[in-house]
Picture 1 (cartoon, helix red, strand yellow):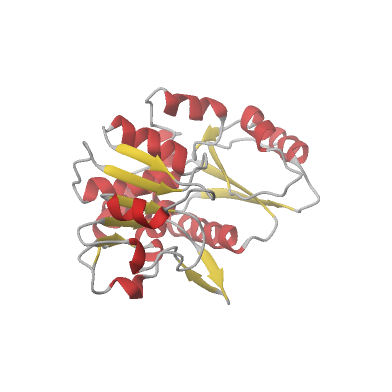
Picture 2 (tube, one colour):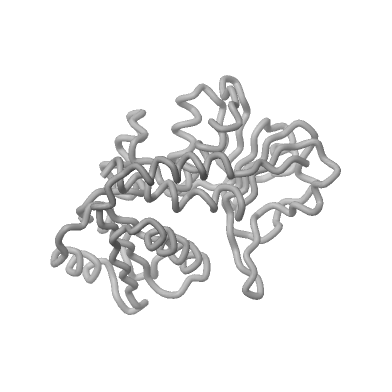
Amino acid sequence: MKIINSKDIKNKLIKKINTAKKNKKLLIISQGKNPSVLSYKNAILKRCKEYGINYLDKNFGDDKNHFDFIDYCENLENIDGFIILQPLSKNTDLDYLRKNMSFGDLDGFRYDSLGKIMDKNFENLPQTARSIIKFIEYMNIDLKGKDIIIANSTNVIGKPLSMYLNYKKATVTLFNSKTINQKEKIKRADIFISAIGKANFYNSDYFRDGQILIDAGTSFVDGKMYGDIDYDSLENLNIDIVTCKNGVGSITTLSLIESLLFDS
C-alpha cells in the first residue's frame, strides 16, 4: 500500500494563495451541529485566519428554514463568495436555496453552476470534487478508458465529478445505497472513489492489487474522524491510496480559498 501525500499539492496552493490580494469576503452557512460539518467549518475558519481572509460564519438553528437563509442574505453587503455546508435540516428546502442564493458560488451549489457542469464548464465544481481532481492530476493518471467507480451519487460529489471524469473519457459508475454486488464491481475497477461517510466500511475484501483508491468520506466515532476505507487492512495490497484526512480533506479548504481569491 502506497499512501499518496498531499504535501506537494498543498505547497502549490499555498504559494498561489500567498500571491493574491486578500480583499475578498467569504460567507459560510451551516445549520445544526453535525460533527462532519463542524469539522469542515473549523478547518475553513482556520485557513481564513491563517491567510487573513475576511469571512462571515452564520449557523442557523434547526428551527430555521430556507426563507430565513435568504432573508438573512438579502441584508448582507460585500460578500464575494459563499459556501453552504451540508447536510441541512429537513425543513430547509435545498431546491429553494439553489434558485435564490446570490453571491459567488464557490461550491457548485446553485442550479446555474450545476447547469454549467452539465455543459462541460467545470469552473464552479464543488470543492471536494475539485480536490479529488487535483490528486488525479498530481498522480498524472491518464483517464482515457479507465473504469471508475464513485460511491456517492449526490450533487456535491458524485454527479459533478462523474461529469468531469466522463469528459476525460473515463467510464464512470455511480453507486447508491441500493447498489448490489459491490465487492465484485469494485474489484474490477481501475479507480475507486468513496464518499459515503461510513467509518472503515470498505476493507481489503473489496480490492485487488493495481488499483487506485481515493477516500473522500468522513465520519466520527467517539470523537475520532475516520474515512470510508479501512486502511489497516490494505497493508499487503499493491495499491495507491489517497486518504481522507491527509489527502482530500487536507486540501479542500485551500482549494476553497483559491476559488474565492481567483474565481469569484
